[in-house]
Image (cartoon, rainbow, N blue to C red; front, side):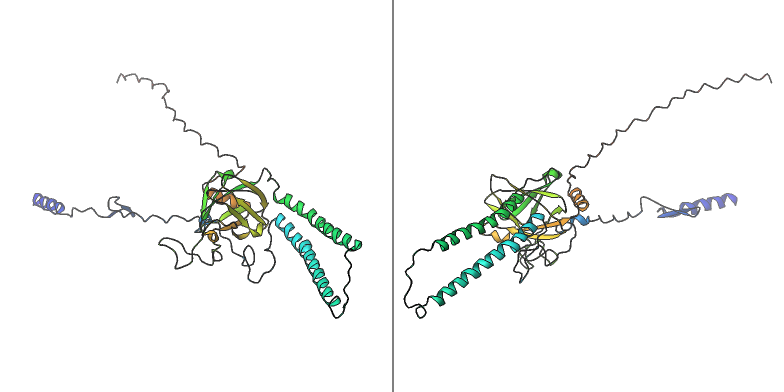
Length: 345
């Protein structure tokens, strides 16, 4: 009977299910079979905020700065020292002088029409020369022009002043009909900027413009990022015909000529988003070559450069990782245990 019971027990154990359980519990700990475990879904890759759809850091757009404003009759608000100097000259020298001359000439014409009309002057004068008047109308324009020339020459000098050694270089290359950019001081990476089309006019796979990108005809798919408070050396050239890189808020308009590199410099003093465009007739789509610049603080600019695969100018190169040292071979140098003498017992 005992033997039969053992046999029956063995048969019952042999008929146990052959499929291994998904998990076994050992002392309260659940162990999952790696062959049947379902792999966990991969975590979504984090999106770098510095590499957004527009290629630059997030920056709100001020509708009254860096772009045309409906009803505005003055130059755009200037955000560079040269631009502020030029705006001062425009508002404080040129406009008053032009206004004074225009009012003087208009008043002179009105006075001549009334004073020397036929009814008031039936017998016209036959005077042909007046020495005093001739001296005045010769010296007065000379004095006016000299007064304008002195600040103008200083302004021109400031516009084309060589950039200092700590400047960040931006090379703008004009193409029909888009801009490409290089950062020679930051590893030489390149960016291409095209105008964003309006919704309903895009091809499959293209991104349409939104209000967050900027005004129509001025928003680009990739924005140029520049640091605030750091001199910028702008180089321009062209791959085909003559273009012109123009940014009104910076007081910059520099021709891009094939086979030639033009240079100027400027320093942005205010963070923000600024819009410009090609200002040289370059073909049928000349009006569709916008420029978008995002001005950010220097640390943010450095982070953006690194995110783009570039290098920070002036930063110390990363130290090379030391080569792995092979593990030392352990040799048992301990003395062998003394032999135990056999016991007489």
